[in-house]
Structures are given as C-alpha cells and as structure tokens.
Image (cartoon, rainbow, N blue to C red):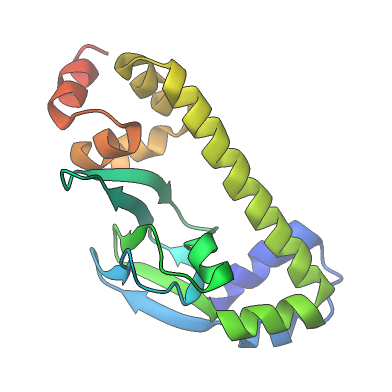
Length: 189
C-alpha cells in the first residue's frame, strides 16, 4: 500500500524528494470493510486518509435525517474532515467506506510534524487544500444552477464511473436529487 502513496507523492512533486521514507513511515495502514464508519459528526477528526484502494463517502444529515453526500472520494485521493482535523473542533461531517478499502492514515501530530520538517509535504498539503476547495466550490456553483436532469448529465460527462460503480441511492444523494426522481430521469437518458 505504501507504494501507491509513494507513487502519488512522486507524481505530484517529482523524483527528488528528501525524507520521503520518513514521510511514508508516519502513515498507518488500515484495511476496512464496506460501510465502516471512519468519522461521525460531533467526533474529532483524528486522521487524513490516503485512499490506496476503495472509496469513501463524505456526508451530512439534514434536520429530517435525510443523508446528503458532499463527496465521493476514490482511489489515489485524500479524504478528511479538514476543518475538524485542522482546528481540533467536533466534525460537521461523517465519513464512511463505500467499498472495502485500503487506507493510509496520518494523525494530526505526525501531520504537523511533517509540515514543519519536510517542505515537500507542506506543498502536497497545500495542493490537497486547493483541490478540495476548488472541487467543492465548482460542484456547489454548478449544481445550484442546474436542473436535476442537467445534474445527471453533468455527472455522466464529468464522473461517469460513479454511475456504474455505485448505487442509485448514493448517486442521488451526491446530486442532491430524490432517489425516485433520479431513477425516473436516468431512465429517460
């Protein structure tokens, strides 16, 4: 599993990386089953996860206990509740595995140590933050202006593998559409 993370870091920063073995040594390998809860709203987020294999769902519950998916995070990507992880306050989101996963987790103490002692790690973290922010803003701005049918078309164009890989219920939650409406509209395409 560490090889996947090593390759990911080298792809982002190039081959000349001092202290790469030190950075990799700070990650804990975690193997999960499907639907394992990694973080519950109100808990403190203890880890940033690198997904070597599998997928994670980041979601919230509204006042009526309806689940809304903020993101579906796939292999070779990072996932965390960054606000809770960064400031040590209770999490506003939940994170669970969608499929069996191989994760590499780094805790807050080791994460901070890597930021201060390995300049390249700081660069990866900034890239992670920028990508997460850009994706969230883009998705929110795009979805606000689209009809339900346009959202489905957007997903088919921009993240087509999600449609075949995950349940209609999860996809509907990600698109902010009622599951029945999603199924009806999908059948029209």
